Length: 138
Image (cartoon, rainbow, N blue to C red):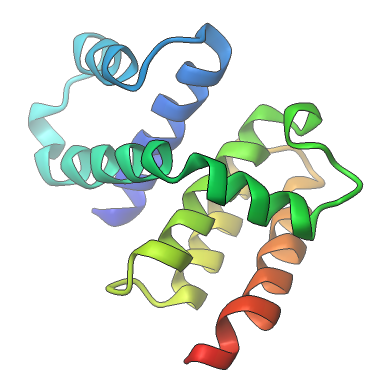
Protein backbone atom coordinates (compact mmCIF):
# COMPACT_ATOMS: atom_id res chain seq x y z
CA UNK A 1 0.00 0.00 0.00
CA UNK A 2 2.78 2.46 0.86
CA UNK A 3 4.76 1.67 -2.29
CA UNK A 4 1.65 2.43 -4.37
CA UNK A 5 1.21 5.63 -2.36
CA UNK A 6 4.77 6.65 -3.18
CA UNK A 7 4.12 5.98 -6.86
CA UNK A 8 1.02 8.17 -6.69
CA UNK A 9 2.98 10.92 -4.92
CA UNK A 10 5.72 10.73 -7.55
CA UNK A 11 3.18 11.06 -10.35
CA UNK A 12 1.54 14.07 -8.70
CA UNK A 13 4.89 15.78 -8.01
CA UNK A 14 6.00 15.08 -11.59
CA UNK A 15 2.81 16.68 -12.88
CA UNK A 16 3.38 19.74 -10.65
CA UNK A 17 6.90 20.11 -12.01
CA UNK A 18 6.07 19.65 -15.68
CA UNK A 19 2.78 21.54 -15.83
CA UNK A 20 3.64 24.16 -13.22
CA UNK A 21 0.34 23.66 -11.40
CA UNK A 22 -0.44 24.03 -7.70
CA UNK A 23 -0.48 21.10 -5.31
CA UNK A 24 -4.29 21.25 -5.15
CA UNK A 25 -4.65 21.28 -8.93
CA UNK A 26 -2.20 18.39 -9.36
CA UNK A 27 -4.05 16.29 -6.76
CA UNK A 28 -7.42 17.05 -8.38
CA UNK A 29 -6.05 16.24 -11.84
CA UNK A 30 -4.77 12.92 -10.55
CA UNK A 31 -8.16 12.08 -9.01
CA UNK A 32 -9.95 12.96 -12.25
CA UNK A 33 -7.73 10.83 -14.46
CA UNK A 34 -7.05 7.81 -12.26
CA UNK A 35 -9.36 5.58 -10.27
CA UNK A 36 -8.50 6.22 -6.63
CA UNK A 37 -11.45 4.32 -5.19
CA UNK A 38 -9.59 1.00 -5.48
CA UNK A 39 -6.62 2.34 -3.55
CA UNK A 40 -8.00 4.90 -1.11
CA UNK A 41 -5.34 4.18 1.54
CA UNK A 42 -2.52 4.41 -0.98
CA UNK A 43 -3.92 7.65 -2.38
CA UNK A 44 -4.27 9.12 1.12
CA UNK A 45 -0.64 8.22 1.91
CA UNK A 46 0.51 9.65 -1.43
CA UNK A 47 -1.41 12.85 -0.82
CA UNK A 48 0.19 13.18 2.64
CA UNK A 49 3.62 12.84 1.06
CA UNK A 50 2.88 15.41 -1.65
CA UNK A 51 1.60 17.94 0.88
CA UNK A 52 4.56 17.28 3.18
CA UNK A 53 7.03 17.82 0.35
CA UNK A 54 5.24 21.03 -0.61
CA UNK A 55 5.26 22.39 2.94
CA UNK A 56 8.97 21.66 3.39
CA UNK A 57 10.25 22.14 -0.16
CA UNK A 58 12.85 24.83 0.60
CA UNK A 59 14.47 22.73 3.33
CA UNK A 60 14.27 19.53 1.26
CA UNK A 61 15.86 21.12 -1.80
CA UNK A 62 18.64 22.64 0.32
CA UNK A 63 19.47 19.22 1.77
CA UNK A 64 19.47 17.59 -1.67
CA UNK A 65 21.66 20.36 -3.09
CA UNK A 66 24.14 19.97 -0.24
CA UNK A 67 24.63 16.29 -1.09
CA UNK A 68 24.45 16.62 -4.87
CA UNK A 69 26.47 19.81 -5.41
CA UNK A 70 27.37 18.96 -9.00
CA UNK A 71 23.69 18.72 -9.94
CA UNK A 72 21.69 21.92 -9.48
CA UNK A 73 18.14 21.02 -8.42
CA UNK A 74 16.59 22.70 -11.46
CA UNK A 75 18.88 20.76 -13.83
CA UNK A 76 18.26 17.32 -12.31
CA UNK A 77 16.16 14.78 -14.12
CA UNK A 78 12.56 15.56 -13.07
CA UNK A 79 11.89 12.01 -11.92
CA UNK A 80 15.11 11.79 -9.90
CA UNK A 81 14.48 15.18 -8.30
CA UNK A 82 11.01 14.19 -7.15
CA UNK A 83 12.06 10.75 -5.91
CA UNK A 84 14.76 12.49 -3.86
CA UNK A 85 12.24 15.00 -2.54
CA UNK A 86 9.89 12.24 -1.40
CA UNK A 87 12.66 10.30 0.31
CA UNK A 88 14.19 13.34 2.03
CA UNK A 89 10.75 14.38 3.26
CA UNK A 90 10.20 10.90 4.72
CA UNK A 91 13.67 10.76 6.26
CA UNK A 92 13.39 14.10 8.06
CA UNK A 93 9.68 14.49 8.75
CA UNK A 94 8.16 11.01 9.02
CA UNK A 95 9.52 9.33 12.15
CA UNK A 96 7.04 6.48 11.55
CA UNK A 97 9.11 5.41 8.52
CA UNK A 98 12.67 4.14 9.14
CA UNK A 99 15.23 6.02 7.05
CA UNK A 100 16.55 2.83 5.45
CA UNK A 101 13.03 2.01 4.26
CA UNK A 102 12.76 5.46 2.66
CA UNK A 103 16.10 4.94 0.90
CA UNK A 104 15.21 1.44 -0.32
CA UNK A 105 11.80 2.57 -1.56
CA UNK A 106 13.37 5.53 -3.39
CA UNK A 107 15.83 3.21 -5.14
CA UNK A 108 12.96 0.92 -6.16
CA UNK A 109 11.03 3.89 -7.58
CA UNK A 110 14.16 4.92 -9.47
CA UNK A 111 14.44 1.43 -10.97
CA UNK A 112 10.83 1.63 -12.16
CA UNK A 113 10.61 5.23 -13.32
CA UNK A 114 14.12 6.60 -13.68
CA UNK A 115 16.99 6.17 -16.11
CA UNK A 116 19.63 3.45 -15.91
CA UNK A 117 21.75 5.79 -13.78
CA UNK A 118 18.93 6.85 -11.44
CA UNK A 119 19.11 4.07 -8.81
CA UNK A 120 22.84 4.57 -8.15
CA UNK A 121 22.53 8.38 -8.15
CA UNK A 122 19.59 8.37 -5.76
CA UNK A 123 21.16 5.78 -3.48
CA UNK A 124 24.39 7.78 -3.33
CA UNK A 125 22.69 11.07 -2.46
CA UNK A 126 20.37 9.53 0.14
CA UNK A 127 23.12 7.42 1.68
CA UNK A 128 25.22 10.56 2.16
CA UNK A 129 22.31 12.38 3.76
CA UNK A 130 21.59 9.46 6.06
CA UNK A 131 25.21 8.94 7.16
CA UNK A 132 26.01 12.61 7.71
CA UNK A 133 22.70 14.06 8.88
CA UNK A 134 20.55 11.35 10.41
CA UNK A 135 22.52 8.33 11.56
CA UNK A 136 23.96 10.20 14.54
CA UNK A 137 20.50 11.01 15.90
CA UNK A 138 19.31 7.39 15.73
